[in-house]
Length: 342
Image 1 (cartoon, rainbow, N blue to C red):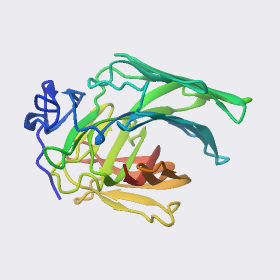
Image 2 (tube, rainbow, N blue to C red):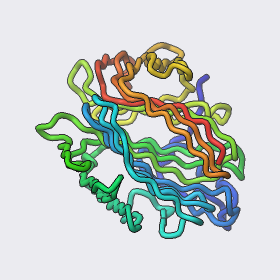
Image 3 (spheres, rainbow, N blue to C red):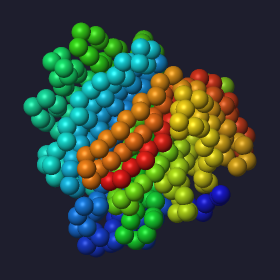
Image 4 (cartoon, rainbow, N blue to C red):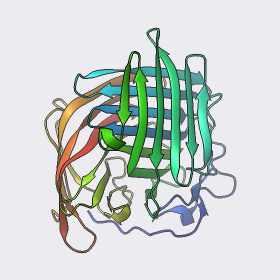
């Protein structure tokens, strides 16, 4: 179903004065982060997070900082795709003490500093630096990565309004070139440069969610048939019925917004089968062939989550923003379904 979404071009507060209700002027989407997430009050329902991932042909890294009011999460995860090895470190923090995620996003520094895990994310106009150190089964691990922000590149920023009391601002960044190194015990992995493409993905969230939620998310980056850099950003389920979506295609960094809910086809009970995402008119028709499934369950009492997140390569066609389509083949990417109570 097509949506009728307003593009925002000026900075705006997410909430009305007092920080409890959604500001009607904040409803819309933009090509760069414009929202100030002035969330105050309503303790227990407010959620803030910065999630970074870096994906190469060999390795997936993810770094999460989350403040869920009653609990905080600081997490580093890694997956070696060829061998299906995985690991990392996760820390839960009562009342999210020490995790400060500001209302103005993609600016300054955020992090967590504990005994067995340290995370530092420094946002800059030209690049974001991500550093982490941790211990895992007695062995050290570290990440030192720079994710470029090429001049002129855009992001997909949108407010999803369930009601004036339940709403989410999300900022999605796909296809950002990444370089650096990950050290996992006695192994070292180079990312980007001569080691082949590596791409940074950023998901920022600020809002107030219903307790039970269900979502799809997918993305990826590669080269189109004409050589241009093509990045994908898809979402689903959680946006249905709101009139807004988080769907788009980036071509050489320029966002082409897709104003409709997309059709997702996959099997929850057999996630290593292909995942297909398609628009009503067929201009977007891409299929992810998975090589790894990250199946995770979390049960922290008030917070419960189960997710299948698959990694692989996308192939198919995407709209080029000029009334035609562009073919992509073997673009690195991921897709997921998450079922949560939080």
